Amino acid sequence: MKILKKNAGPLTNFEVYDFLQKKGASLDPAQRLMTTLAPSELTVFDYLAQTPASTQTRESIIEFTEKVKVFNLAKAEVVNIINIRPIDPVEAAPIIEEFTERMDDDRFGELQTMIDTVLPPRPEPQVPGEDSNTDAS
Image 1 (cartoon, rainbow, N blue to C red):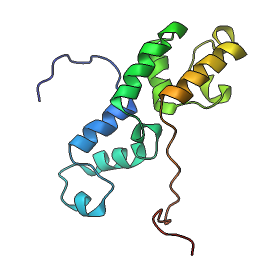
Image 2 (image 1 turned 90 degrees about the horizontal axis):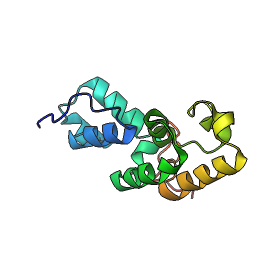
Image 3 (image 1 turned 90 degrees about the vertical axis):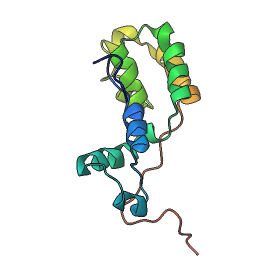
């Protein structure tokens, strides 16, 4: 792989998650035994698998970054919205600088609608020790 531009900007969690997947990271225990990834890389992958990054696509991120331009958000604010996928003003306020001055209820409602329609939903939280493939019969 050739680096085209050093420090081109911040990466979204999806880009890190996708990169680690391409390097062989997986949640499958059998594949994890054969990986050449460092334990720290697997730890990052495990964390990101529980965040919105695991359900996002490159296309949804590109579409969101194009549509969100109407809000005049800083690049860091957009990256944080993509990474965190806030679901209410309480989660969005720390992400967007001067939130109360820049986002009234209607404006945030528009942003929230865009987040909900363009970005995939958050993954379901995984409970440790609970197998999602078992049925309760």
